Amino acid sequence: MDTLNGRQLKEIELIKDAHFLTVKQLAQTLNVSEMTIRRDIPLLVEKKLISQVFGGVVSAEEPDDEKKYIVDEEISRNKAAKLKIAKKAVTLIQPNDVIFFDSGTTIQLLTEEIPKDFFCTAISSSFNALCVLAKLVNSTIITPGGVLSHKPGVFYDQESIKAIRRYRANLAFIGATGYELEMGPTCAYIEDAPLKQAMIESSKTKVLLIDSSKFDIVSTCSFAKISDFTTVITDSGIPPEYAEQLRANKVELIIV
Image (cartoon, rainbow, N blue to C red; front, top):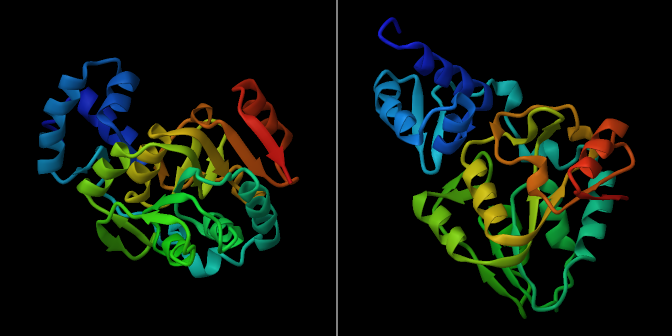
């Protein structure tokens, strides 16, 4: 560690806090060039202080067990609110829409609300969402592919991120496991972050589906700023300061 300079030590600290950062985010935070960051990365990887993944870098430390996102437990937590959010979200979908469906239990509930005879183009890397979407016999279902990562239940590799960025959608439904005023929306797994980012970048309307149990929670990986979203759908438990932040960022807030 004594061979690292102050900037490199700060890079390690920032990556550890956010768990996932892009080269651009690091450069902007430290007010240095992206080339400087790119020169630092091989050294930090060699020392096993960080790991390089497609789209950015992650902490070499594994998340604590209590921070891990477990679908079977999560799907029953605050389910009534999630179902209300899903029922509202489905009203935003129009026939012939091209839609990104992210991972997460609220997204899964949303896919279950789509009529079986509906026709749209659905794009998803989520195993659970795809299992439901596959029943839409009149729709086109696209998966970017990749290797199944069991804990978040998503298909992920470098090519899947590139594939998502080649597509364009008029709607993207994104989930999060936490949302804190300063840290913004976060997710639990590093595989999820670049998938979410690619969907947000490639869609016109970005809708964050998040129930009120997720407010004031910081999960493992940062993936977006709240201002990146067009709309947030949540329940009546949203704290006033979060509603104020959304309106200040001109994000449409729908409370169910």
